[in-house]
Image (cartoon, rainbow, N blue to C red):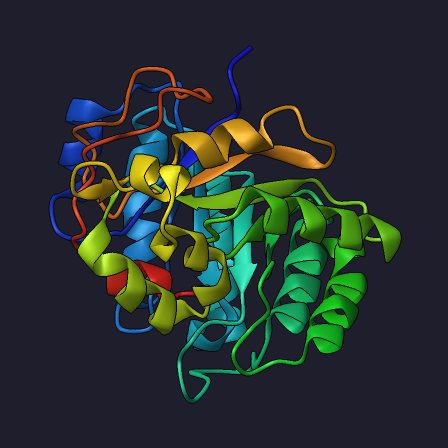
Length: 277
């Protein structure tokens, strides 16, 4: 049985054409919202891709929404384009562009403006957040879960950590399905730098240990996510894989399963993609 997989893209110049040429219409796409891009670029790409026939989940960063009027326009665009799910985060923008300083009030307004029809994913952090205490993260998910349809995790390189996180959520009464954030093939020279940027260093430690496992994972010059994906397949609470492609789509297969994740993704835009959460 194939493991449900969504692929994340960054709305850079030419990405819609690139997706159309290389990604099957059956693939669900998520479109990032980076601080220096803003909501408009995310929605422009999301609407174009949805109108082409893709299932699209745009990311909405609360701190990048300039006004409630802009939010209503965004939700109207979603409705017209047939987009029925978004992914809501606080965002890394230093100063809010408008009335939303965090994800919760944005989720509340989305639910109000759409009558609860818009599904919304929220972020989860198997290895914590560099600026938020662990208990506060759990409290925040408990507060948001009645407005959310799923949890999408920060990029992680350890199946046990992701599974422990899903189990923790269940123990704490958060019953949302978990989409596991998994990197595609990443050059090993970028791994340590990537871990430092987004705070996932502990799950990368196994990659630096000597032994057969490390040698297998680091054979050649790239990290492969295949073992990680296989370790998550059919596990309780794991809905599927949220695959960070870094906008290199040439290796995304027609069907993405536990043993067929991309193996030739380039590191372009790793920093921007990683820092969104």
